[in-house]
Image 1 (tube, rainbow, N blue to C red):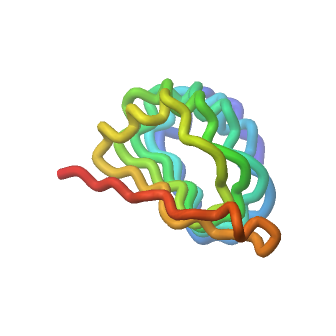
Image 2 (image 1 turned 90 degrees about the vertical axis):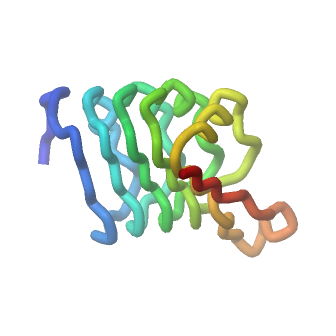
Length: 132
């Protein structure tokens, strides 16, 4: 499937479809995307930095995958983001200052980090923030 129109889609929900591999780079072209749900798949690699190009993004759900490394600082440019769920992945690192402003969002779930056995000593819990 080839997706070329940057105005389409505004909503992409591919939850629990067992999608395997990295998050496709073509998603970075959808600058008008408002909702991206890729939770519950078998995505691997890192959260791509192009997520910062999705400036109209309101919801980003990437939980329950096999994503690694850290949350990219570019996510801080998504000023419309109200819901972020990256829980139950293998993410690590410090949350950059730009991302801290996401705490103003309605829902941020950084969840409990899953640990690979070789990294067990480095794992700790991140918190969930839910605001009315």
